[in-house]
Length: 307
Length: 292
Image 1: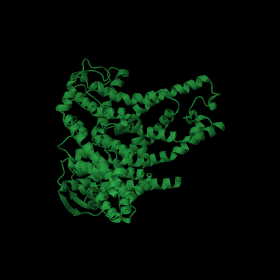
Image 2 (image 1 turned 90 degrees about the vertical axis):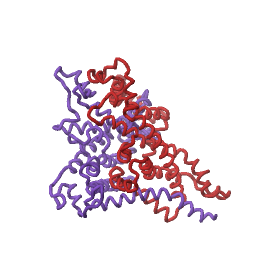
Image 3 (image 1 turned 30 degrees about the vertical axis):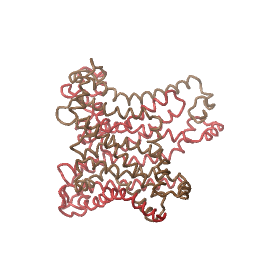
Image 4 (image 1 turned 45 degrees about the horizontal axis):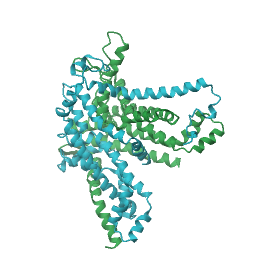
């Protein structure tokens, strides 16, 4: 067989399965998602076309299909702000720890390993570990959580524990605990990433700075930070995507109760829960898609400037 | 590496005028920060480990840091058998192995064609692949689920396998990037020697891609072993590690000592993998994703 014929043959054969999978499990669902978002649709199928009513409902408006204004979805977007702020702090902390680990440190490999390991752990395991850590137990059916156990060492006799995760009057506390779990899980990745970025800076630059008599703070601010700032800004932009896509930990730990509902848990409950509103859930997916696209466009623009 | 690459290096002359006491103080502070960070990582894990060896009454009546009187291995047995963790481990291994093989085969073949053959068609497909990586996988599942229902694949192993293999665009991207740095002249000289294209793929491209394959394997293991959502949604009748673990906490009468044992069982394979390939795992997981 000639090489041109072979080329077309191979292109067809090698791409057949990947393209079929791509069409069936990505492209068709993506198109469906947009179409369904303008429908009243249940798991069993199509009911009616509703125009933009699903979107109006998401942003708290009233329409013919949904006569009552409902803020539940907007609240979940508010909750993602906790995670957004959390991941900003996470970046700062990771950078701080990475700088320390890049200096002469004994047992650096061990510290690195311990801090990175949570990133590899199963999300359900992480969630259950924190359900226990922040748990509130009566000691009859539920054991006392670790943090409450620690607090009881310092508190007086009457101390029965704090409801970190399940106090209906304190959603801020519950969300902060979940953000802590998320930072605990993901910070190791950022630390390793910043370490490899810092180590890729040429030693010559430091030598030159030394000759000019730069102190270590000046070195960080004028050499290290500028050379890793593209990665920092990439991470900060990506944090927006991460903050609206939070799912696993809050789903397992609180199930979205006590004011910890996230956008994705809400979308899933809307589709697969008692509401059975596939159309509305698809509109939520489209909103998430739009946020993702905006973030990616911003990211591309920022990085074009950098180069 | 010269000492100059460490910008907090105490031997640097910029520090020479700093009094010795202050230098020692800052050096000690570094360790204080690292130790605090590590303690924060370890405490939640240690208390789960301790709890996994306590009996139910011990767990209720003793503080989280009190060691168990004797090792209650029964918790582990109970997690394995009553709690379907054993079934979960088996299914997880099966799914990880099959979808890794599938990802490697389809991923390298796709990358080979898309990177080496510069035709209008391949450029188009490449653009589509890259564009789909924008889609938010997690909420896309609502419409993907409708397709999987129509295909009658709910509660079959085929559902997670096809989804893991079919949506692994990151693997394709990594392979393409890797091929960008492998000279085409290798292929060309093989073709001059009379090699067919399938032969070029099999004897030249595939062996050259070995480091990239290692990266993809590690990424896939971590992603699939830890995935909860896909099996939870598509295989509600079967258990993988994640869903078996979640299963232990449903119902009204939760045995937390058994839950803790399940958590430890679930972490052990990850720990073994981490310890056995610690050096390469950082570069495989972190550097791989930075290049994206």
